[in-house]
Length: 190
Length: 422
Image (tube, rainbow over all chains, first blue to last red; front, side, top):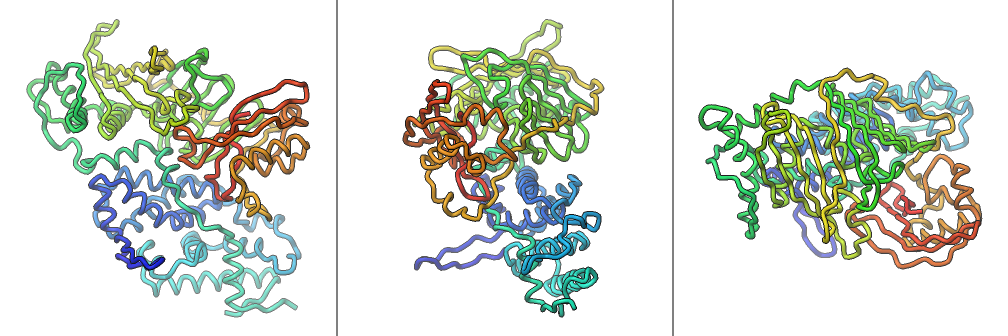
C-alpha cells in the first residue's frame, strides 16, 4: 500500500506505506508490524474463510499467518509486497487445515437448503453457489464482498491486475447466476 | 416462472450470504497468543541474528544495574556462554552462527517427545493456572514432530489434543471446544513442547525484556556435561490490582531453570520457582522426558462424549446493541439475575455454550445476588479487554460465595461474556 493522506477532525494524518512499516518492523518496531496486521487482517480472514468456510477458524488462520510472517520477515525480499506475501502464507495455512467448508453448503449438502426460500432470504442458496465456485474465484468473491474491498487493494493483495480481477469476478458471478438458474430458483440477468 | 433479478441484487445477496462483520485485528490478543513471535519483532537485530562473532567472556552470575549494559550483556550471554563452554568441547573459537546451527541440527532429527511434569494447579481448571498453595497435579505432554506437528497435553481433569489441523479441548466430563492448532487452550505449556526451539526462544525473550539470563556448566548424575540456563522472568501485566498476580507463569516473577545435555542440546529438565516476596516456591517441574519413542496416533484425537456441551463464539444477537452497551458490572448482574430466574436462554447470551448442562443449572439456578462490586483489571487478562467483577451470591442451599467474575469483550459480537470465576 502506498502512503496515504487521511483527513479526520481537521487533522491530516499520513499513513505509512507497507514498505515503510516493514522496514520499521525489521528495525524492531513491533507496533509497525501490528499496524500491518490491522491493515490486512480483514483480507487474510477473507482468504482463509474462502478456503475453510469457518469464520472463527479463519480468524485463527489469519493470526497464525501473521505470526509466521513475523518470524520470517527477514525473508521478505520486496517490502512493498508484504500483503501478497502474507496472503500466500495465509492461504497455505488454510489449505493445510483441509477443514470441511461446512458453512459453504455444497452440492452434497443440499438437504440443508430450504426448498422454498423465504421471501428475500436467499442467503443459503447464494452461499451454496459461492461454495460451488473454484477456490480462486471464491477467494476473490470473499475479498471483494467481505467489506467492499477495492479492485486496487485486491490487486495488491493477490498480485494480479485489476483487469484480471474484473474478468474473474464477472466469471464468478456468471457461474453463480447459472447455478441459481439451474436450481430453478431465480433468473439473474448480468 | 422464476423471479428475475439483476446484477445489483446478486451482489447484495453475495454480501448478505457471506454475512460478515468486518473482522478487527486485536493486537493485544495477538501478542499474547504469539509471545515469541512478538518478542522476535522487538529484537532489533532479528534480521541478522547470530551473524556476529563474539569474544569469550568469563561467565559469572552477575547483577547489572544499567538497562543497556544488561540488555547488551543478556543479548550476548547465552551465545557467548555456549562458546566459552563449548570451547572445551570443540577445538578453537566457534562462530555463534555455527553454534546455533549445531544446536538446531542436533534437534532437527527429533521425531517425538513425551514430557512428564507436575504443576501446582487445579486439575480441571485451565492449563495456565498456578497457585503457590495448590498441590501438584501431574501433566503429560506429547508432541510428534510431523508436518504439521501433532500434540497432546493432559492432566486428570482436562485434555487438549491437536491432530495438526485443529485442536480439541475436553474439560472432563462434558465441556468441549475446538479451534486452530494455535488456539490458546494450553497457554504457557505449548511452547514448552517446542523443545527444539526453547533455548533460542528464551534467549530472545530475555534479550527483548532485559531479563537476567545466566548459564552454568555442571556434570550430571549420568556423568555427562549439562548446560543449566537460568532465566529470571518478571510478571508481564499491570498489577495495580494484584488479583491475577502469581496465578500463571506469565503473571508471576519467577525463575526458570532449564537443563540441557551439553552435547545433544536436548532439553532434559525444567523447574519454575515463583518469587512470592517471602519465598521461592517450586510450581512446575519436569519429572521425566523421553525422545523419539513411538507415539500412538490415537493420542492426537479426543473422543467427545455424546452429551458434550460446546463452548462457542458469541453470536451477534438480534438485540445485540442492548448487550453491547452493558458495563462489566451490568453484565455480571444480568448474568446472575438470569441464573436466579433460571432463564437459561438468557444465561447463554452471557455464557456462550451450546447448552446449559444440568450440573450448572443445579449449581447456579435460583441463586440470590447479595452484591456486585466495582469491576477492575489485573495482569494480562484478555489483552486489556477483560474485567473482574467482585460479587457475592447466595446459593439455593444457603451457602454464600464471594469471588470475582471474569468478563471479556474481545469477541466479534462486541459484548461482554462470562469467562469464568464462579
